[in-house]
Image 1 (cartoon, rainbow, N blue to C red):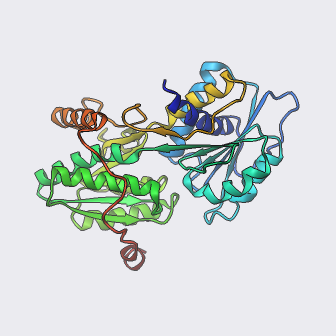
Image 2: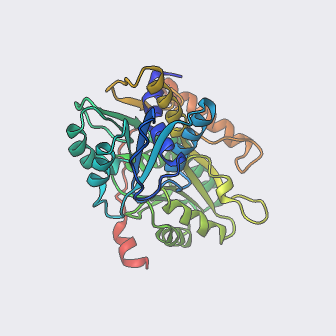
Amino acid sequence: MKKTFKLLFATLLAVALLVACGGTGNGDTNGDDETKFKVVAVFDSGGQDDKSFNQSTWEGIQRFLKDNNLSDAHAVNLSSKDDGSDYVSNLDRAATEGADMVIAIGFLFENALAEVAPKHPDVHFLFIDGIIPDVANIHSTSFAEHEGSYLVGYVAGERAKADGSNRVGFVGGFPGPVIGRFQAGFEQGVWAANPDAVIDVQYAMSFDDTAMGSSLATKLYDAGSNIVFHAAGNVGNGVISEALNRENVWVIGVDRDQYLDGMDEKDHSVVLTSMLKRVDVAAYDFIKEYFENDGKVSTELYTFNMKNEGITAETTEDRNLTSEEIATIKDLEEKIKAGTITVTEDPVIPDQTAWKLSDVE
């Protein structure tokens, strides 16, 4: 695996180790003196079991633990409050109480991490999904989410044209560069396939509010969208839940393969496909590099994209995608890798948060 993946993998591994050893919430971060390695993963309010970004990281960590019999590692999981008021205290606590590695999971930790890390120069801080330059003990990672979102957007645009709706929806967590890349790629893919399509964009202002996800999905489906792409962590589970209550609507999953999460009692899944952000692979390889190099890791930015297989779309046969759609995705993927198609990072449509605040209870 390319070195690019290795750094992010290490970061994600730390998160997985943390959860694997049973730490929760405000868990005790003090470990046994005999412990050879201690990692503390700090999550935002979405927690570990969000069925997308955080869970995918955890799955990569689980694989590494199983493959390497890492039973002597001590790990703790700290989840944060909805308002982020304990980001600094959680990171500082983790570093103060003996962690070799602290993993901050998600771009919302940027300011807190920049404040805490310089105070603990002997601790490795792994930043998943964010960039903090010029701090020796912060290891930053970034993904080209816009590339994979283009693939699923193209399929959504084609489907909207075929079903006559000419309308699709997008649900994001918080506006910002990371989720903005999901939106941007989705927009470009939809319009490449269907220039006349209308794209309704909604932001939940949360990564944890499943009820808001359900409410936003209700609005989008009622407005005529038959396909909704979510990039919102736990909020997306609310989108899937609403789709399961309807007929002939679809969800596009995110980060990990969410096909089984969308399964109903008739063994039909409402998840058309998923945009795969391979944080699981990243977690595995990054932890591996950490151990193989005696805890030494580079401060170089590690970027995961389509060319190095850090981003793709789910294309398992005999599910909900047609063989033609699978072939289209693979063709577009090769064109993006070759540079024939360039996907930009900036979204066009403003988020319609005002609609959410005024119309969704």
